Length: 438
Image (cartoon, rainbow, N blue to C red):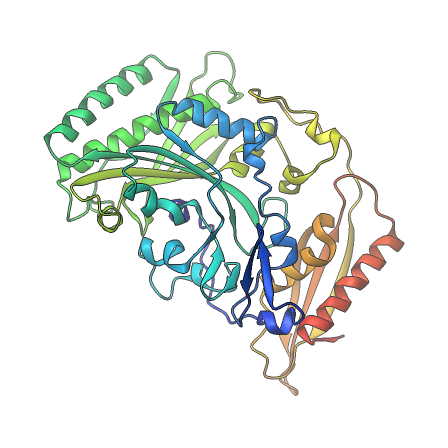
């Protein structure tokens, strides 16, 4: 269910420049040793392919690995799955989860397509139906996921998600299991330093599904809430910075996700402010039916490891997770959450590029430009901002101006070096998109 919980915003469906125009030399894309033919849908770039298989969350001494281990240990009796292949079909990624045909997540502006039949998964839920179909009843699934996105301190085109689900029988036995587990979890939380701002399990705006008995659905929703309140205690209870003896505050909010009902978001009050942590809900029955496990009901949650790790470890820039600088990697030890100590702050250097698009052009999406920058300069770009856009009233030609902030995480960049780097970006822009530099 992570796609429902982690989609950060909706975007307009836009046609992007095809791979054949931007990357005309190769005829195949090689990912993890397998070659895939390219076609007019292909938009995955070399910079993204280079990240496939890194599996940062599987390094026990990496911040993502430390967090992954902490969550896995909390759900110690859940089957924890890792290392699933990142190349999936549109059916796995979208159709099996009930995505409508016009959902923005399907757009080539949002997702990295290898060809029309394959893409890099955009969420761990691409494996959800197959996991339910194997008969898993209590499971965690962790993986690297890929989305075309802007460049800034909190967004990166490769990140890591973790989702969990628990399945209960829809009949009397399932109800008894739920009641017993709810009593156990409630007793644990009653003894714990936590204050919960709750919402009704079911409401007219957050209802049970027609296929579910409302009383049973309410028990499932309660089990979900109790389970995640306990997880919030594990992650944040001793680290909230509120002072000795001050309880952790957790807030539940009604939400809408296409793939769960009822649905919720969870926030914690951490170091003086409310922070969104994850989304969750009762799984749509059609998902379980599609997995051929009817007569069951399930809850699921999904979270982004980077989002939580940046909070817990005080890591200010998402690019740092990919750093191999010993000044970063040596700060972390398996099993320990420690505060990141900045080892340097190098000055930023801004460069602008203004250009005319081809007349009658369908346009150049912001994510096209960000991918070009990443492919050209790697992680030397700290952020990219569109600072001007207009259409000439006489020629009807469109103009855009982007500001690129170049800043290395590991060393100072001279102005001459940045000029040379930026010149490569401008050259690539002209070659791959046929723009006219202003």
